[in-house]
Length: 423
Ligand code: NAD
Image (tube, rainbow, N blue to C red; front, side, top):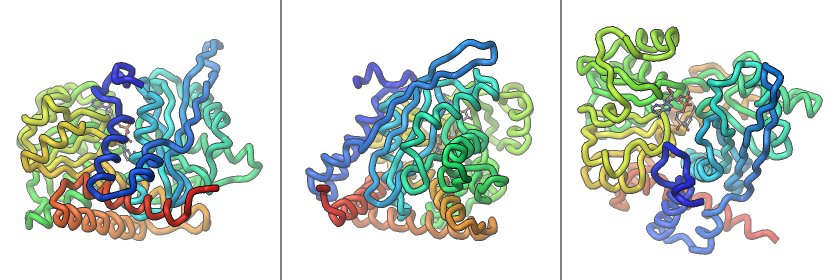
């Protein structure tokens, strides 16, 4: 696919970016080019059409994808995105990043991703359920607890996971808890899963501050996105003593350099659907939010929001990638040259897949853990991955992203070589 065909909000084709990143990792870490040639491509890409009965009796047909990138280290794992700009190449890129993320965290999973080209906000709940159940049926041979395990992503939530779980289970004739993660607690979800991605990002920010012998008290943070990742991260940061000076959603954001009342702002948005008109704050655009003077900038919405154009003007010292792929490769180099620490997505937003792994384990064992156990084990895994990445960065004199990818790709390469090439 050419760049021109990339999703409308993107400047560059994410699949090409993911492949270029891998080739650079291969060169830097001396990985066999034959192996890079294998890892650059996705193992399986399934495209389905999803005819859906609308409430008025008409039928809409949506396009859906499920891509498995790699299964060398275990079954594939990755979210399902409902967004009007989803493309096959975007889903492929996201599946590749999932492989590295699972590997960096040391989880026994490969990478996958799914997506449906749909604006879920335009569907009624019944329509969303029918569409989700039909999509699940169309990919029913691709997913399963020992095969490929979906989870929520942009535009999907615990209810969508409940419908996938139920549709899969009805077809099997019994409940299959391990088929999907991010489920509601009532049907085998894990305590701590909802907030896990944000919690992992928080742990990463705390680790950088530890390196700088700086406390989180008074840390000034701008958060783009107020969904699962951005909303929870903003709330947790404030609870830990940081000052969140800006937050946004797809319609724009709010800013107060003295700090926002985040719990009230999130409650206001939940009630009214947007931040507009929130007290004690000025309205800003998503573009302006990126350029605010702050300690930490946390892009937690969509890809490619920090580009070659705005990277020279970013004023944060630390960029924490809550979203997947929010910084383009050129912007990444600019930030690196300017001495800005970028906590890459495969590290900073991996908390979600770590607790998804816990949910999968709990489901297979039908034995559920306390929230403190979940959070303590999450902290252990994310902190270990952070330390490994930080040390590799210092040893190799490279960026956090290159260090993280290097560790992750080497592990997948080792598993692939150890298994051998079939037949
Ligand atoms: P979500 O749907 O809950 O929230 C997305 C947020 O982004 C919403 O506040 C939305 O209004 C905002 N948004 C949408 N378009 C925007 C735009 N053009 N500009 C600014 N804001 C915009 O999604 P989420 O689960 O919070 O996921 C956000 C990002 O985090 C995605 O990149 C996703 O892949 C990544 N991620 C999510 C998880 C998870 O567990 N949910 C795990 C890892 C990574």
